[in-house]
Image (cartoon, rainbow, N blue to C red; front, side, top):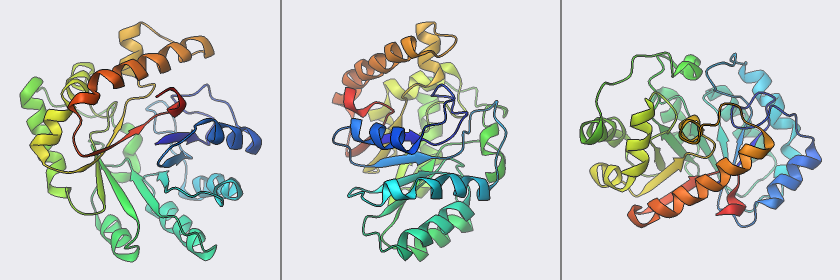
Length: 259
């Protein structure tokens, strides 16, 4: 899953506004990917939330670049209004490839049920996020975390994910969200064990440019130079955990060409 952020304040980028040409070139530099994931709002804790209208405008602006897609498009948004409005635009233009709602909110509510009911060919990513409401999805690091570690934490996370392990749902433990430094590493290093606990076949795993990787490498501020180091480290980690992965696991990454 190749990631494109169309936002000026992405935590994983350098805060640049990409031109349509730069976005086009970035997508084509990815090589062979299975899903394109596009985000138009940063949920980094230091950023202010934006309205669904503003988010939709950012997505509509790059729609011409997406019309030639032959793979599923994933929208990284917690706004139901954004997802439904964009889905309507997608269908009005006769797009044949399916959409995926990558809903970072972690809130399985009526909006999710409605989305899956209205769009039987689309899929949904259910994420782990302890933010109190859908609207406060970006405040996930301000809540009280579980004190558990190791096997006990994996069991807790499995209990959170398992009730929604169903058809057309991709489960994401959402590394970097609502977790301590130690809990992030516990999930990454024992991901296969978590999969076995839940018993689901379709997963998303995203740890590209996450702050817990930066912390281990001693990277305080992201620059072009150390971003390259971080991306290569991500690839090395992926190689180490590959043998334990089960079923279908989409790797969400900013640099799919490296893996």
